[in-house]
Amino acid sequence: MKYAIALLGILVVVVITYLGSNDRRNIRFRPIVLMIVLQAVLAFLLLNTGVGELMIKGFASVFDHLLGYASEGVNFVFGGLANEGQMPFFLSVLLPIIFISALIGILQYAKVLPFVIKYIGFILSKVNGMGKLESYNAVASAILGQSEVFISVKKQIGKLPKHRLYTLCASAMSTVSMSIVGAYMTMINPKYVVTALVLNLFGGFIIASILNPYTVTSEEDILEVREEEKQSFFEMLGEYIMDGFKVAITVAAMLIGFVALIALVNGIFSGLFGISFQQLLGFVFAPFAFVMGVPWKEAVEAGSIMATKIVSNEFVAMLELGKHTALSTHTVGIVSVFLVSFANFSSIGIIAGAVKGLHEKQGNVVARFGLRLLFGATMVSVLSATVAGLFI
Image (cartoon, rainbow, N blue to C red; front, side):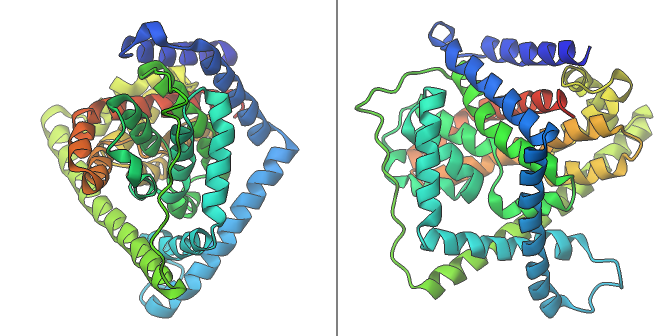
């Protein structure tokens, strides 16, 4: 039964995306099928084998140690501010982003990340049937972040046609940046974070290949990655530390605003209709939760958390998931994988703003297909969660 529902879920995603495609006749199904099979194989390896368990434990251990080192800096500045054993969310989850951002800057400065991103992207381009630029961008987005990644391809932003620009933006919304992966791991099981990172990478190409199919000619398939302006080591380090701080503050502000607004809307709906806004959205998203593999008796509850992620952001939804302690392990795993992406309304503004800052005309183009971006990124999350659900 579980496998039948998963196949149904994959079929639903493909059909819905197909209906929204802008060029159905040019969809190439062979690389799509190959990537779905790859997703299933990778999900099995990560969730059901000793090798996968070892890899996830190793990955989680690295971030656990990094968060421990980050807490040294946080405690030095804010020590004694929190009650014993009650570290505030901002201090324990968000401020460590500053340290992770600094490490990413060091790896960028040492040319380690550019090398890794470029060659993983090259290998991916052989699998997904898309251009080198699109493949590079997908890997870079998962490491650098949804706005910072566009700086590295600044030279080509202005030359890109609408369809290729869409794929670049879709990759940025379907992934998450490495600087906040550690924060996610403090809120949900690390194995689901790692699984989502891997599956979303291929899921982004699958959905883009259906929703926005095209062929890149050899003349167009040129990858020009912008070299960062030469800075001294400490100039670079200061810049990345401040970038990390800005991310932490931005996420904190978004959480304050969205949590408060959701509470307000829930209060209004409860008073008028006897049901909260989140519960209402739960009924809308329940069918999607069900085809992802969530038991029907938990589908409304899971759908409510999924909806919270889309209308606010993944942090708010992860906090909400933590409150639903009666959900089964299977449901928690599926919903956790769904939550690990930037697919929400606020990301439309972030991505459009990032592109507009580099090229105003192209930024306006991105703003016009913003809802289509969100639709595609949400389908990526549904697909990844459905495939992962087979092995949870």
